[in-house]
Length: 183
Image (cartoon, rainbow, N blue to C red; front, top):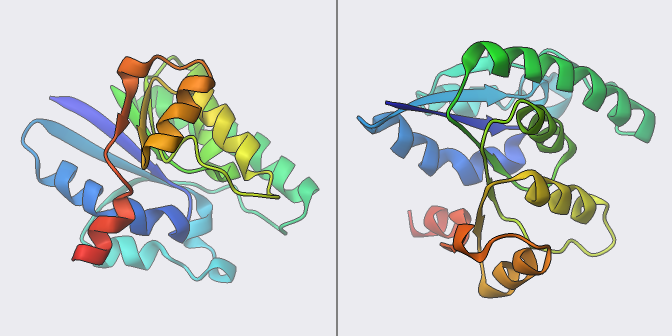
């Protein structure tokens, strides 16, 4: 049985990951471990862990590193401290693969930890562009550290190929949010 670790950094990615998490958790071929950043447990960010709990999904790892503010120094401290926290958890958990979605700094920190521990990374929503935001740089870094790429459009597939990724490891299955609309 393969162990799949899915990381969720905030409400922004959890809503898109929810259906995937439910499918993995009900599969007989995979064991699901969910790792959630501290953002899910902070009052200032809406304590969104309750959404995960209400969906009857178990969080195996609950991040403890707090984000004090949204300024650059706070984000730098958060990233550095959470990378240590994430890597310690990943060493103990030993997943076969890590699934990440998007471009936020919480996801970036988790990605770096998995990358250095040589855990294969599956990235969802690579190749996209957020005009005027530093998210693009983080997304492209996550893409470069990832082994498998699930993009939401052929334009993004081409961009991931332009970043030098193997086209045999890039899959266009569309955006996970479309399934939410259908449901």
